[in-house]
Length: 393
Image (cartoon, rainbow, N blue to C red; front, side, top):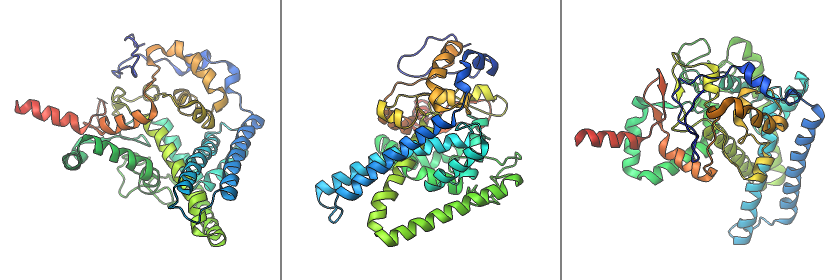
């Protein structure tokens, strides 16, 4: 177990050589009831989220005029709606994501039905992403095989980043990083594997860009073809429904009521996946150093405002537990986290930096790793500039 002094301003620097506990030790530390899944309780939380979404949408549609969005009052009102509705919809997204982990109930068919319906409603190809997200959980912080926010390799991006920082400067470049991740990160990941794995399930390098909507994408093994197709059919049906609703209620109404909140949902889910797995003190591993527990314990918990944390079912404040026990329902995760802390000691990672600051700091400091072997830490283009300056001096 790592014996370094716990840092109060961020996570402990991990060497990658610490002795990690066995999964059995962590399971024994957690009360047994934390592993129990309740269909009734999970459905209660889903219903709560849906009621909140409906109430916000009902109030906006009936009481917010949209005839002149250049009017500051209307613009402010609709901005508030978009942020509130998108944040509430993210709670539904998290519950559907739990269905993909089979954490919703003891019944697989119920989990997949509920997950399929509500992820499809949010334009997530359920079975396709269930598969790739499962790979993410099984290969956390693996440089070659990890899924979702796998770091770039320096030699591939350093030239581009140097040019961008020359043109923009440090602060603007960090802001561009944040905007690209939050606005474009999710659709780019689904469509072209942005920040995804560097090789196929069989270990060979991708010949074409991974695509969650193509059942014959190299992303999927043979057994996933049918489920991937079912997922894509659902997305096409949802898009057709949205087009029909746009014809009925008008494009402006649909943009305000659905599409802009949808972008907020995307921003939230990228915030969680990016920030819970990216920090300059937490390593990524080459295949010569990676193990499941070592990679999993390089997951990071962060603080989120109380109301948002409640609405999002503590996905960001109990992310370590979620990765150790992905079938555990969210309503037990806080208790399980506290139970595991004494066993994990300094290996439990938490960064108290407020989320808005953490986004900017991550955009500044975490751009690439040096290579694909050994224990690698995220570095920034500014590190390279400093190193180059020292060589000149």
